[in-house]
Length: 237
Image 1: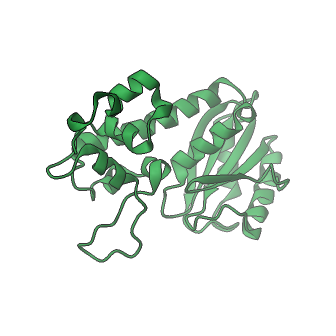
Image 2 (image 1 turned 180 degrees about the vertical axis):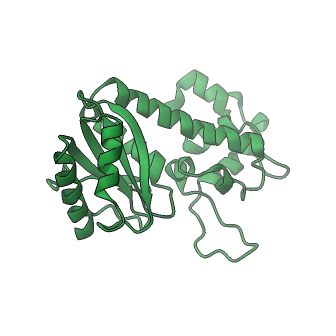
Image 3 (image 1 turned 90 degrees about the vertical axis):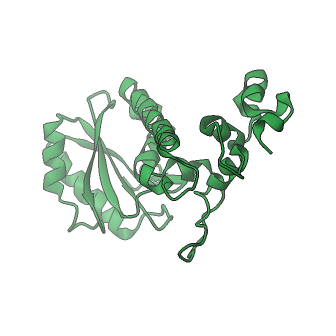
């Protein structure tokens, strides 16, 4: 069934304007963004397929499923979206633009007030940047003297250990930005956000190195798809 075949008060755009966005399902909100479906598939069906769970170990030529809900979809890249039939360049660009707008909105919050006044925004911001990556990435949020965000840099990638994350490089970047404090962050592609002993050891190594140049480590946040953990909240920083 196409949108025009639905009763007027059930069409997503009209429903949103009449009742507000909270009244719409995830698929209905996404359908408004997509606007049209493809031959043989209405826009609501296309939206739902994008939100469906991915198919694990799909064979070549078989449908790979969706992206696992809104969070999964927002963590995708333009190249990830190319596998979905019916998503042309324009639709892919719009979805990626929504993700970038979300990142920038969260970054703006953190540049305007101390990061611990917006702890949830910090976690969401880091999830949007790091959670979907298929490899481990170590990043640092550099903060000013009032603990507002100056910038974020991805400094290392691969298997993160004390030997692959170089304290000297982190210290040099902190000095470059004249940072007063930092928030460390990395992702766990495995899906678990529980810190390992290596994570704890790395945090303490960087904390000691940065203390030598009077830069505080406020937190170390671990992110995965749909979740984030603050090591400071666990008393590990």
